[in-house]
Length: 462
Image (cartoon, rainbow, N blue to C red):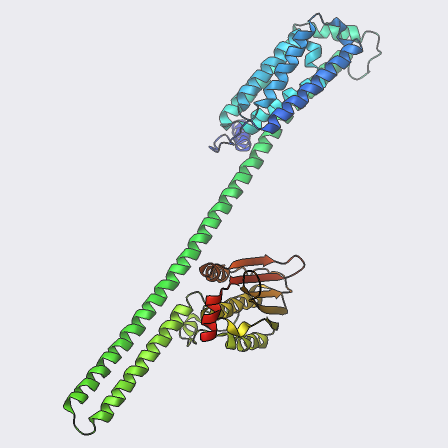
């Protein structure tokens, strides 16, 4: 039973100190490390000289430059504590021992104790390999307690305690020597345990932060892959539909054109009417093919359907696609949104009727996608659509802005393909995009398209 308990305790310690973890915390020497070293150096020297001023250092026979050198070395170790954590911890333990033997008053200074604590803390917090940390910090702790025990058992520590407490009455429960030994042991135990455990806690915090950053990077990469895959799948689907449409209508055109040619070659009475009918079928098939191809290409980035409405994938795929929207269709689009419970205000500023058809198509698609996002992912009950065209500005532009008064609805995060499509439409026409939360409340989608005289004249000609 005892063996099992020991194994369990050692296992828990190994788990806490993460001895099997291969993650390495990278540390470097920064300006902050130099600042810490200089600050501790100044504090240590000031404390040393203040103690010298009150006469506490009169018992020390060491020259002042030796004491200053000890302080300089101790403070300098802190500069390299993150880059060489275990080396600094070993040197700090050696410095503590040597200074404690020859310059005990310097070693006992509060700033010097802070230096040693930070060095041991950094050894546990920044060590690259956790097994090495456990070994090194364990040896330092054992050596320090062995030195303390040697002072009590062999050195003059007990005699000094007796001399300093000879005139005191003491306690009826614990004698002065026992009390001093226990108090010193507890203080040193808390000192070293606090540095090592605190450093390990700091290391685990950094480890968790690195894991979260890695997970966030993985999620971002996977999200990008999903978006790219969705784009590829959509393009493949449209390519298949285009193939079917073109193949069907071209076949019909070929058959009807051949029939018309044969009728014209025969030149019999009544063949002219048959040829005319065949050529009409050719014209109708050609128009239908062009209309369907424009519809498919124009809806490359359109959402398949509203996720909140009733329906299935079969219904969505069988939906009859409408021709690409024009600016005249925008009021009808807004009325359709209003029927779903969202109040939408529309305002047109400037000569919006002069927009070229391709640009008007992009504006309608952006409005459609932005309002769809408001319905799906926001608590808003009101939205505003503003279309501005300014031909008198230094750089003529057409701007569409969609705002709402809601907040994000929990549990409705989408794929982001809709806003990605908005950015792609804007990038094609070198437009400026501003998408994000508003400073007061709600969300904003604003796209500003650059205009030139050629584009505007083309729009008027249409």
